[in-house]
Every structure is written in structure tokens, then in C-alpha cells.
Image 1: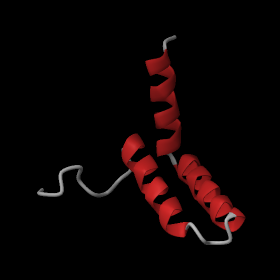
Image 2: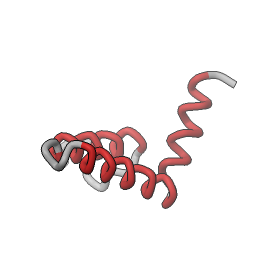
Image 3: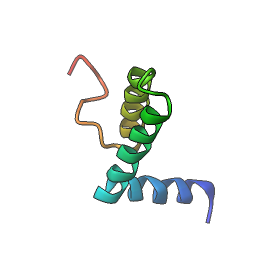
Length: 64
């Protein structure tokens, strides 16, 4: 099993409801750890994670 196989499995796991809960908990923990000072950066990272695994509702091309 190659690296790409592991990446695909990880993406598939994160696309589900449990994966979304995991990402939510990670974002909440990061916000709590920073006292909310970096919430904008945490939200930006969450958006990037959603786009990377294919959970973003927005199209990749903003002109669409």
C-alpha cells in the first residue's frame, strides 16, 4: 500500500460525519488554547482542510 492509498483513506474517513466532528473538535481546541486570539486563522485552516478533502460547498473557481 503506497502513500497515495493512505491519503485517499484519510480523506475518505474525514469526509464522513465523524471526520467533520473531529475537525470541529480540533478547531474548538485550538481556539480554546489560544484564547480566541487566532480564530480567524483557525477558520481559514478549517476551510483549507475542507477544500483539501472535498467537503467545501464553494466551487474551486470563484468565477463559476
